[in-house]
Length: 145
Image 1 (spheres, rainbow, N blue to C red):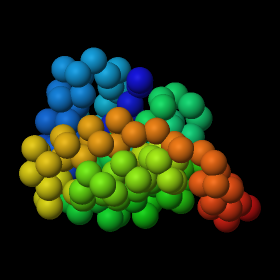
Image 2: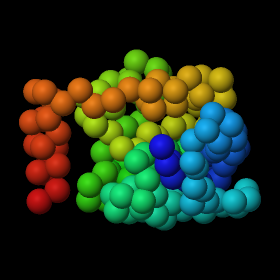
Image 3: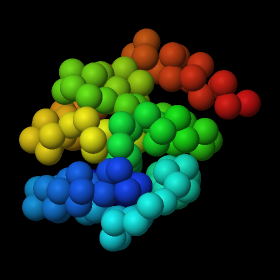
Image 4: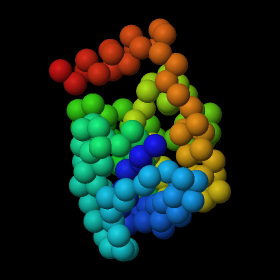
């Protein structure tokens, strides 16, 4: 599975940890930045990752900012994106199973790396269940029109 990852300054440290964690697990990870600690605007990176995921350049995206809130709000403005801010494993799995989320958003200043790794595992380990959830996702996507 290919994953595109991105962050702002508030998520830089956790993004670096997750990038190594995912690469070590065998995922193909493409890093859209930032590549060194610098103060940046999170909507720019949410847009870059969101547009790439929506265009099919990767199956999933992960965005990290200080709380994950800004990234999730910004990423959800990109057509075709269903970004989910998750702070626990249950929500991460349900984001994939019920909402067919294609970007996971995390808070680098609110999650420890161990919990963040568990959340990523729960998210990536889950699959969209389809069935009656399909119609709900269609309704979500129709809101973009």
